[in-house]
Amino acid sequence: MRISFDFDGTLADDFDGTFNDQKDKVIAKLQDLKRQSHEIFIVTKRYSPDNSGKGSINEHIDPLRLAAELGISGKNVFFTNRELKAATLQSLSIDMHFENSDVELDHFLRNFKSTSMNWVMVNRQPWQVFNAAAEVEEMEY
Image (cartoon, rainbow, N blue to C red; front, side):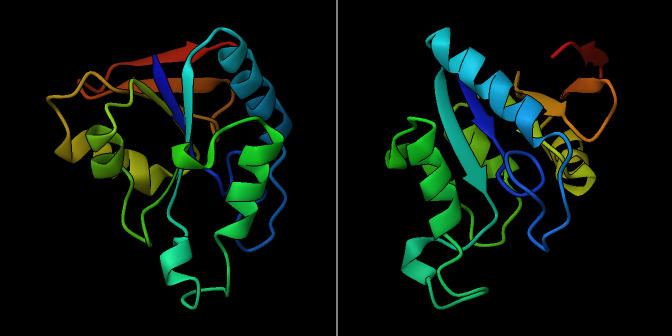
């Protein structure tokens, strides 16, 4: 499977520095999925290296650094330059995406009804898995 993870608020603290108490559990899940030979991606709304002067200067560095620490190729890190992620995830043929933003989930559920992609919301306790049919199930981590 092709599995992606949001960066801010999912794999790391929020962009504004707010502490993310789920990040260690999310990273552990990523490492477990990687050990199972799933293809792992990081998809973030941050600006790309090509746009390093926009937003917070060089904000692309932290996701690339974490990817390297986790053994994820830089080629599997995607920056949407502040665009919502669902279209990028669909273009990458992602099967499952880990996210913390209700705005991102709402956009996905309203606009991508023909996809089989699942979204795992790590801001819910326990984590909840959503699909385009708006079916919800809980996920153990």
